[in-house]
Image (cartoon, rainbow, N blue to C red; front, side, top):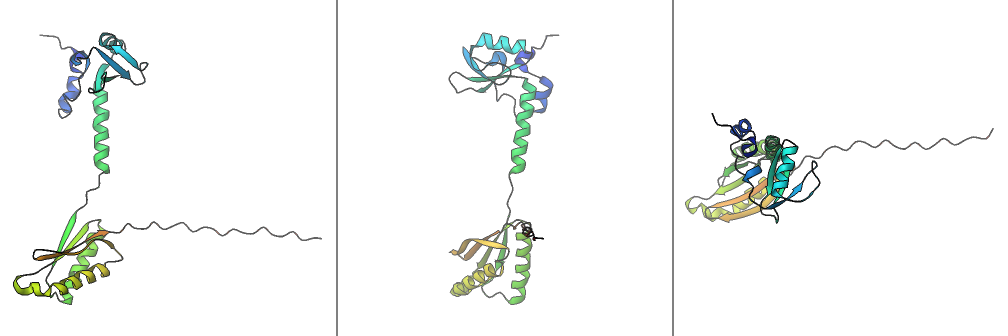
Length: 208
């Protein structure tokens, strides 16, 4: 059975679980540059011939990892490759978790929507905004109903006004083909400020 060279492959068991990162970084003997710049805490930052850099990594019983291949000379770190990949994947997960996904909910009106239907849709819009979603409301003009486009604009402006407590207007009513659209974003909830305790004036000393 052949012997696996750890210095060429890193931790094989770890790489099997992180195939998406495999091959993104050259390590050890995969690095082709004649000299590299080493950064990090383990070794004094400097430019080293590749043979010396590999020897330093071996002395620390870790790997030489090329992190900036396009630099002149390429930048490397002396670090355990499996730990390097783990920390990289952890940072990617943290960044992904910080990205807030914003949904856009659509609400459709007719140009002559009655009050009952309007209030029903207004209630839904409030729910969407409280959940942090954007709301895209539009009036659809079918056939000759395009003649009532002013009515549609008034309806959308009324809708935005009724939602003033919950939303800000991203885009005023705009006619696109047979649809007049307005877009609203949820307002950030104000954090109540802590009441400031009134300062008590020091009591005046009375002469005896």
